[in-house]
Length: 162
Image 1 (cartoon, rainbow, N blue to C red):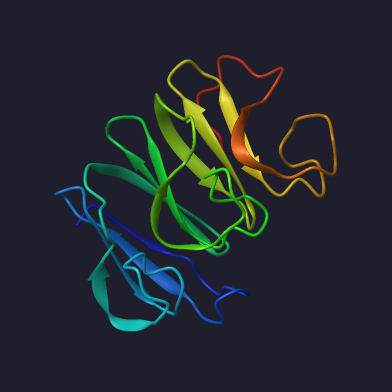
Image 2: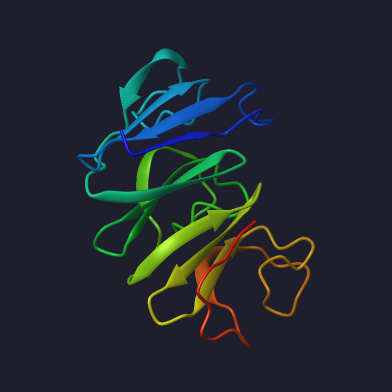
């Protein structure tokens, strides 16, 4: 096993989830409902494989959404989507991983409770999700985004943290 990530208390799923990234690039999840990524809305007290994920290089957990960065530079997400935080061009929830729209060359993803940020190999940062307090860095404090948008004024970035 490479990585173990605990999502902690989660106000949308009334519980917590834990994720394990295995050496073979697959992911296991257990805990409360909604974030197991296996197509069900049930919880589990044993690790279950997240559906359709292989080649995962890192995980990020933000509130009620999980993000997997793949070795090919793309990103998949699953969980709640009400403010666009899945990045899949919709605001629907998904209990299986979906593609984050239009991202390639991603090095890492970091996430807040309802927004996410991808660092690309070219040193740019892309954001999506809730923008109630301006957290997307796009010059506004209202419009959420359900697709990743390049943040302006940031170049040569080497790390993004929450």
